[in-house]
Image (cartoon, rainbow, N blue to C red; front, side, top):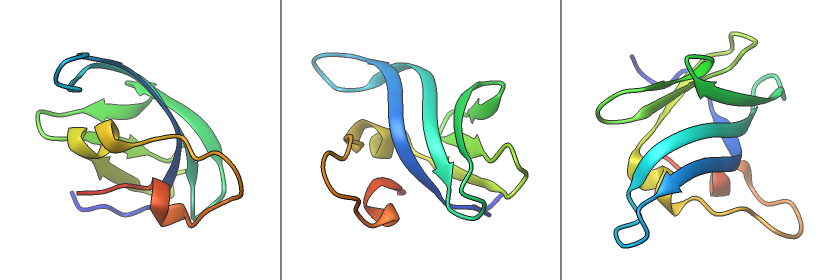
Length: 93
């Protein structure tokens, strides 16, 4: 299913392998839906679905979903300072 929404990632809570940076376990994502402005925490089975190739994030308000690859989540870094473009943090591959 194609992406039908866009999210600004605000936090990525994951266990990463210190050598490779590979995500071993994704605990939760905190995101803001750019359509309805809802800020939410998604966990496996509650707004977050893990597949073999990506993590699927779904808006709790029903706006849609967006897939994030493991590579995009590994590259994510918290933005410190003034607000930036939502696309700077909503990484996609």
